[in-house]
Amino acid sequence: MPDLIVSSDIDTLLSSASTTAARTNLGLGSTDTVEFGALETSHLNFPNLTTSELNAVTDAVEGDTYFDSNRGQFARFTGAASYDVVTARARNFTDSLAPITGVTLATSGFLESGLILESANVFSPAGLVFVHSGADNIDGQNFSSVTGYLYHDGSFAGADEGWYETGTLASADSVVLPANSQIRFITGSTGREIMHFNMAIVSDVTDKALVSETLLAGVTYGISVKLSAADMLNGNLRFDTTFTGLFEKARALFTADDVETGTRLGTLTGTMSEAQVFAFSDASAYAFDSPALGFYDFNFTITPSSDGVFTMTVRQATSDVLPLYINKAEIKVTSDSD
Image 1: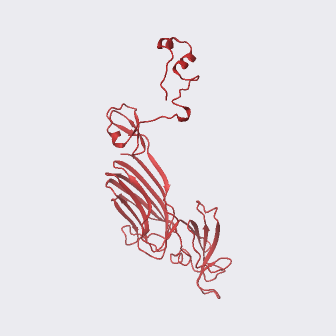
Image 2: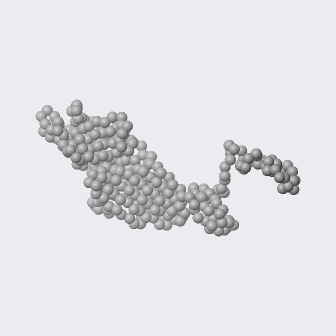
């Protein structure tokens, strides 16, 4: 930006009765608007400091405002060496897991888990499954196709035991459930349950990363993870959290709900370690199975004493052919000064 040039001496400027002349002398233009820099590049800059540089400031005056580049926050000084954080960093996102499928109706586990009942009469099914393909929005609309299926117990003349498409009664054992589908279960005339899944985990105890977040020492973080998971084995769901640094303090609050029965299985809270396991089975610390259709809500409050990476993963607790179905996790990370 060019230096400010005053084209007449200060006495002439001060004695001028013309505001137009004063503007001209100060180079302020013809209106009352003061412009800093060229219009297309005008912006207001705050001193950009790291957290350690900000903590070392000892000559600030009340009202001085700086940007903490480590925390992504603004800090306003209340004295020469004390400040309050005036903004909180917040990010909302979903996990980056790519869709995984390959599960067929024959290997779906819907029958074994009790989500679908066997039908003795293919023309009067006791239970139905409707698959909405490509139904990635909240209510399952805008799907690319929807197809109904039933499971026949083999007692009807001319029909072997297995899965069949409704209407055509074509054999459907080998039909693959597409990832990112909404599955609707109907039992009798009243029972209706829905699950939406992005990936199916079968015979696999490999950790699938839901969250990976760098946390800085001395900053307090809130991490919220919400997701639905369908466990066809009932008791084979496991989440792990790990941190590569050390915690000054850390607490967790989580709830688990059985969507099928409407029962809250547990609301638990307490301190957590740098490596924490959330495994849901009768034999686990939480003493309840993960249900066929479940919803899980985790809330972590963490202040690290050293920098590190916080991760949260999901997997089968033990390898089994009955699948886990995992929907996209909704994640929120906030940070503030302690």
